[in-house]
Amino acid sequence: MNNVSMYFNSASTNDIENIIEIMRGGYHKCWDKKFFLNLIENKNSILYILKDKKSTVGFVACTISDRDCDIIMMVIDIKSRKKGFGSLLLCSTLSLLKAMGVTNVYLEVAVNNIRAINLYEKNGFKKINTRQSYYKYNETMIDAALYQMVNTKN
Ligand SMILES: CC(C)(COP(=O)(O)OP(=O)(O)OC[C@H]1O[C@@H](n2cnc3c(N)ncnc32)[C@H](O)[C@@H]1OP(=O)(O)O)[C@@H](O)C(=O)NCCC(=O)NCCS
Image (cartoon, rainbow, N blue to C red):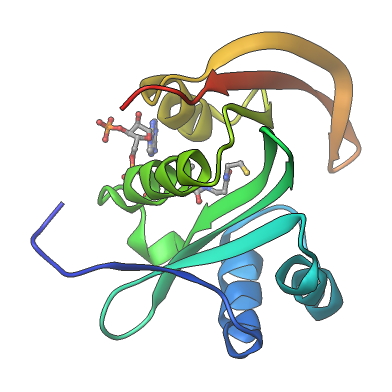
């Protein structure tokens, strides 16, 4: 990644429009404003954004229960991919979760989402299960791989 200053912050309601724009431009799911508002307001969830000086380049949403966390989704703006921001967002999230006392991090990813699978496996996630026909894309059913990371390393 080039030497640009990046900021990893908790999202506020003012960020929701940017988040929805990033999601619409490069992710198969589309959640509405209320969904993101709940993530901000709910004590058991977090919504964080990765920003450079000018704009938001990505976001991550998680639900947390004691020492367990599910990463619901993480998305990098389609214009900013393959520049190391996904790795930075994931590593920043794992550091934050560790500081919060979370030790088990889980996520589900479509088995054909090679970009995301590479990113997760590169960062220590291990596949622990497969859920058959879990997602539906354009009338096609796709399996989900369930990944876990034990987040205790320094
Ligand atoms: C998955 C995603 C977050 C990666 O973000 P990114 O900023 O492009 O990732 P990085 O540049 O940090 O790349 C990190 C690693 O991811 C993997 N990766 C990223 N893009 C890839 C591609 N096009 N093909 C294969 N692997 C890829 C590689 O392992 C890469 O490491 P490398 O550059 O050393 O090969 C991004 O593609 C995205 O937002 N996708 C849509 C949303 C999504 O599917 N999210 C995951 C499920 S919730």
